[in-house]
Amino acid sequence: MIEPMMKIRFLVHTEDKKKSLVRLQNLGLVALEIKSGKSSLKIYKLKKKLSRYQDSLEKLESLVKNSTNQSKFPETIHTFHQKLLFLEKKINLWEEKKLALDEMNYLIASLQIWGNINWDTVNQLRENGIELRFFKTTQSILDKTNPTYSKLIKVNQVVDSIYLLSIDYQNQKDDFSFEQIVLSETSLEELEKERKILEKSKKEDEQFLSGFKSSLGLFHSEIMNLKSNLSFEEAKINLENSSNGIVFSIQGWLPVVRSSEVEKTLKEYNISYEILEFNEKDSVPILLRNNRFTKIFEPITRIFSLPKYIEIDPTFFFAPFFMIFFGLSLGDLGYGFLLFLASSFFWFKSKETNRLYSLLAICLSLSTMVCGIFLNSIFGEPIFLEDSTLIRSEWFHSASGLAIFSPQEVNGKMIYPAMSLSLVLGFIQLSIGMILQSCNRTLQMKNILYSIKPISVLGMIWGGLLIAVRKDFLELGLNSNFEVGIFPIGTYLHSVPEFFGMILFSLGILGFVFFHDPSKSFFLRPILGIWEFYQLITGLLGDILSYIRLFALGLASGLLGNAFNKVAILILPDGNLSSPWIVVSIFILILGHSLNFGLGLLGSFVHPLRLTFVEFYKNMNFTGGGKEFKPFAISK
Image (cartoon, rainbow, N blue to C red):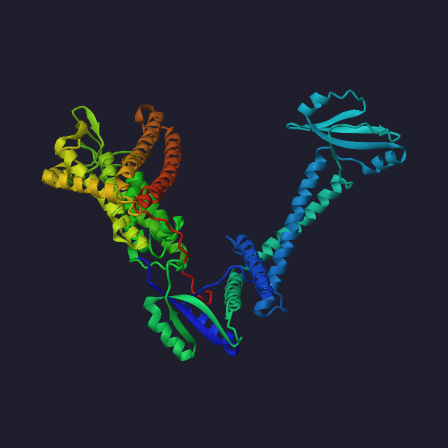
């Protein structure tokens, strides 16, 4: 859910500007309104310095990674800033050597094409009126121009590039439509010597810098300090001057739940303030407040956008569906266990700020394992076999009842309960989306009439569903015998009286026709409703059918894994595990399942993401665009 906010204005005397801002920053609970257009020379310098240190930190992190070296500062270096400047200079020097070495390598490569040129001889020829020119062209250009000059010599060819040498006498130069190259008059031997010296010096710098892993905190600390100073300067420049120039003011936002704490602190600090009313035009910052489970899925919400202040936070409503959708898409106990091991490892190894992503991966892996049991799949093979002689445990055979959505053969036809389950889940999620749309439209339009359209659509689709089950509509199988695994959905729906479905459907039609757009004339709405109704039916049908992708992804992943298993077994002569070919079989299994696991992970994340952001968000009328609540505080 979205944390309620209150708008507050701070009033400070010109002599207390700095002191008051320092106290507000130490408080760290208020998000100040900072206008992006305002800047100053000090802000510019702070941003430049911050960028410089962040760049140095990235380079140092790349150098110290996996290093066991231990380096020390010179004895003359003692203070915090001296150490920072020393490391920064060393890093910049290493970067310069790296760039110089790249240029040296390019220069040597360009000269190696022409061979080891004796430039003393070339200069002597030039003094005697003979000049050498170097050209580069391609075979197609050479065929078009077709030069017949005897003094044009082909020296080398690298792929499609042809390198030519022209010998000119007494300044009698011919014009060629080729690219002329100016070469460095340094011998390859000298350049090779310089490169070795440069490589050695660069390597020494790398070894020295790689020993400062413990000094990364210096840069982190200074970067946090610079961010705090930058935030302070931006707040100071955004103080609005009153007409007399004595009192300054700045506005901000405060979570209502922390208002009493902030007001108490402001009184202690003797900072004047006033609570302001705010309207729809105000850009209210968004602070999400969810329970422990829902909070894990907040990174998914942020991929698209934070909700606006007058919208419902969708995180709580899509979180369980996203978890189930991921599990169905990957749908394998073995793959789920691998993901669980990897995500648990990263949870222990990652920093506190990144553990939320590891927790998300753990939740998704648990869902995959559970769905793998329900779908009866482990690395593309069935977990439970009807006549298993390999496992004789009674408990194991009794547990086979858990595979409630595994494919079954009925009357010679394969039945896939997972496909029906995908459609049912999609139908439920879109229905929830309609309810949320009703709430969103009421909040945004501040008129309850705008909530009637989505509720009417909900009445139509649920009423139509109840009628369709009773009538066995088009003999599609949606009748009293309709089942999803062990769940007799058709029986439940058939138990609802038919007149109830007719009432729901009729009220839904009437509500949609007359209230699909309350801003239009009441008598014009039925005419415009025909086109709206057509768009609704075609769009809603497409949205529900989109959920079949969950079944298709799980089926494709299982079949591909099973195919790799069969190929690995076919390699073995008569299935003999003691054959030397077992090495090839193991390689095929590892490579095949690694590829399938990687593709499965990608698809299992992207497609539930699409169902959430396209189908669900569209049906709940989610617009997003909210800006995150960032309090004016000391960076840590």
